[in-house]
Amino acid sequence: MTQGKPSICWKCNKLMGVADKCPYCGAPRAKALVGLSRIFRAASQRGVLATELIFYYCIFVFIVSLGVTFLFTGFSGMISAIMTPPSATLYLLGLNSPAVFQGAWWGPILACFLHIGIFHIAFNLYALKMLGNLFEPVVGAMSFFCIFLLSGIGGMLLAASNGVVSAGASGGIMGLIGAGMVIIYFRGGGFRDPVFQGLLQWLIYIGLFGVLAPMIGLRIDNWGHFGGLVSGAVLGFFWQSQATKAIFNVFSRGVTYLGILAIPIAYYFCVSNILPAIMNN
Image (cartoon, rainbow, N blue to C red; front, side, top):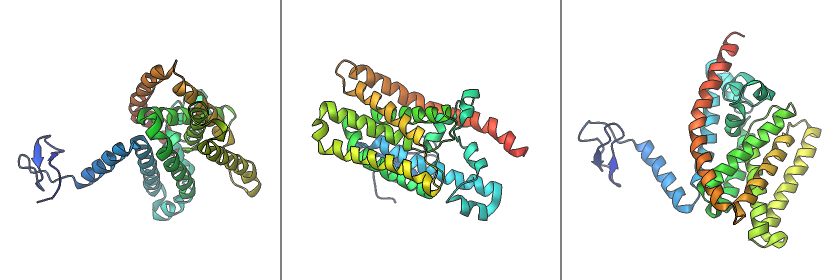
C-alpha cells in the first residue's frame, strides 16, 4: 500500500484512500499526477503557482517540439532540434509572424511559450524563476499570469508589426521587469530601492545584449523585448494605483481564465491551418 495522503481516483472520481488500486474500479494510483499535484500545492503555498505553471508548460512545449520534429525527420532531426527546431515544427506550434495581421491570431498567444533551442529556453526559464520568486508573492498568481501573458502578446504584436518573426517567453519576462520597476517605484523605495536597481541592471544588460548580439550573428527580438517592457510597465501602473487596483484584480482573473481557455483553442486553429501547408510541401 502506498504511504501518503488519501486521494480521489482519476478514473471513477471516488475516494480511494491510500491504496495502490481503486477499490471501486481497479484503476492504479496515478503516481505522476500525484507528484505534479504535490509540486503545485507546494508552489501555491510559496506564492509562486503561476510561475511554476508557466515554467513547466514551456518545458512541455519544448518537449513536444522535439517529438514533432522526430515525426517529421526521425531521431537525427530530433537531436539537432535540441539546438534549433526546424521551421515546420515551430510554425506548427505557433511561431509568431507578420501573418498575425492576415488572420493568424493564434501566433501572439502560443509563441509566448515556444522556444527556439535549449539555450533560449534555459535563459528565459532562469529569468522567469528569479522574477517569479520575487514578484508573484507580491502581486498574486492571477495578476502575475496576466502581466506575463499580456506583455508577451504585446511584445509579439510589436515585433510582428515590424516584420519580425518572434517566439519565446522573453516578452512576458520583460513585462514582469517593467511592471516590477513601476510597482517598486510607486510602492517601494523608488529609484534607490535595491530591487529597483537590480531590475534596472537586468534591463541594461538585456539592452546591451540586444545591441551587441547581431554583431556576432545572434538573432535577438528587440522589438518584442521593448513591446513587452512597455506593456508590463503600463499593467504595473494599473496594479499599483489605488484607483484601479480593484478593477485590475477582476481584469486579471478574466484574462487568466480566458487565457487558459484560449490556449487549446489556439492550438486547434494553428494546427488545422499550418499542417496542410506543411504536408503539401
